[in-house]
Amino acid sequence: IIKACIFDLDGVIVDTAKYHYLAWNRLANELGFEFSIEHNERLKGVSRMTSLDILLEVGGLTYSNAEKVVMAARKNEWYLEYIYKMTPDEILPGVISFLTMLREKGIKISLGSASKNAMLILERVQLQSFFDAVIDGNKALKAKPDPQVFLLAAQELNENPTNCVVFEDAAAGIEAALAAGMKCIGIGSPEILGRADKVVPGFENANIELIKF
Ligand code: B16
Ligand code: MG
Image 1 (cartoon, rainbow, N blue to C red):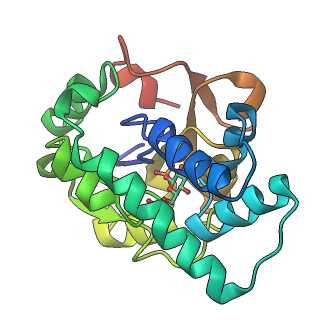
Image 2: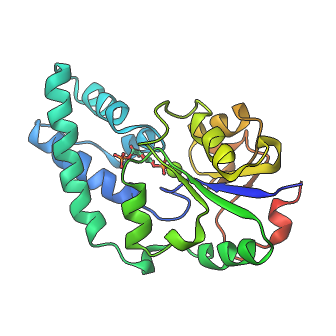
């Protein structure tokens, strides 16, 4: 029986992937190449530094660690310019009513995101009050598909992993949830998220049946 729900942020609650893309492409352009939107799929759910490594691989470029730290920081500054402008209208359809329903049923709620900016994003879209725990890229140091982020969420909620379900839009996140011994619901297309216990396109019309297994 499910007692806690753990939500990924980017691609599940809000679509910040478009802002990550704009900021990464700005960096690519400065380095003299174009980072196509198709390549952006590879960045979903992976950490900032791994994203930079993928970007540089696409551009065929190599830099020292010190240079990469500077580049990642610049990208983040550009990304934050978009994040500061976010409003609650950017919450994906059906999310607020689903979270409200979970609260009414007494189901605990946590965030489980790779992003170091997760807290700021939750504040911008005014969703902080729904979350009993927030595990983000500052607390979880091992990147998905490592289960650490979700295990820490279960621990903070004081729940057994087998009573938790994870909502994820990235393949690495599905693997992390399964490795944590949790149920997993993919948000997106079954082609990418086929390993999840269920896959739905989003939270529109989602009700309590969704978390019954
Ligand atoms: P930041 P999620 C992830 O968020 C994004 O999907 C991924 O593209 C990004 O690189 C990562 O956060 C780190 O974000 O640069 O803000 O620390 O899907 O795990 O909520
Ligand atoms: Mg995601």
